[in-house]
Each structure stands twice: as C-alpha cells, then as structure tokens.
Length: 78
Image (cartoon, rainbow, N blue to C red; front, side, top):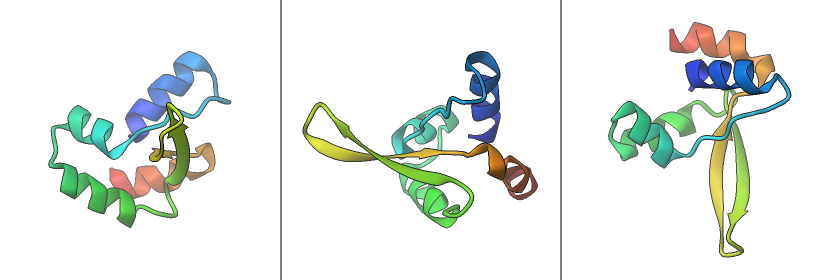
C-alpha cells in the first residue's frame, strides 16, 4: 500500500490520495482476504478509513495512507 501510494502520488500529484479496499489489497498482494481485513484493522492510526457510497446503494470502506504517516508506515512495514 505504501509503495503503490507513493507511485500513484508521484504520477498524479501529492494532493491526491489513492484509495484501497480490502478486496483490492487482497487481489494485488494475492493474500487471504481475512488476513488483509485483520491487518488493515491493526493498522488503524497509520492508515485512514474513508467511507464512500457506491452507486447510491451501500457505504463501502476504503483506506488511504496520508503523507504525514509515510515515515511511520515505512518503519512499520519495511
């Protein structure tokens, strides 16, 4: 998530925060979805949660990494 956030922000600008879902993280890392859900819950405080309404139906949880937390994320995730 950190690596992809940095890549996308370099490409689109520092005022853009890419959003990730548990499903997209699981798919991209080829990791068990239950493990990803537990991991994103454990990283609360480093990553931020955002809730978006999709197609006027249900709220969906998304995560993003604020630039102020890049240093903390690097030390925890590498």
